Structure formats: structure tokens, C-alpha cells
Image (cartoon, rainbow, N blue to C red):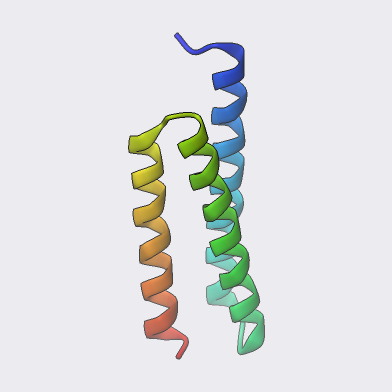
Length: 81
């Protein structure tokens, strides 16, 4: 069972991840520098989620989020050179 603090931290992680996924989706609908802006947003939100997960001691969650961020970076570099 999670403490209230852990539940709040987990909610923050989910919120940042959701925003990161929304930015990633928007990246595909955008052109040129707008795509880069959404990409930067996605990186920021995932970095925040990772940071919160690490502070909360959720190492598996942090690894999962880092892998997702690595995937987003690879996709951007491949599809939006």
C-alpha cells in the first residue's frame, strides 16, 4: 500500500508522462520547427517524470520512462532530420 506522499508522487509521474505522450503525438502532426518544439516538450516532460520516479525510489518506473524517452529521441532523429 502506498503512502499519501507516494500516491501524490505517482500521480505527478503519470501527469508528466501523459503530457510527454501528448507532445510526442503532436510532433507527428507538426511540420518543421513546430515538430522540434513538440519534441523538446516531450523530452522535458519525460525528464520530469524520470526525475520524480528516481526521487521516489521507483527505479523500475524510471528505467521504463527512460527507455520510452530513448525511443522518442531515436524516432525524432530518424524521421525529423
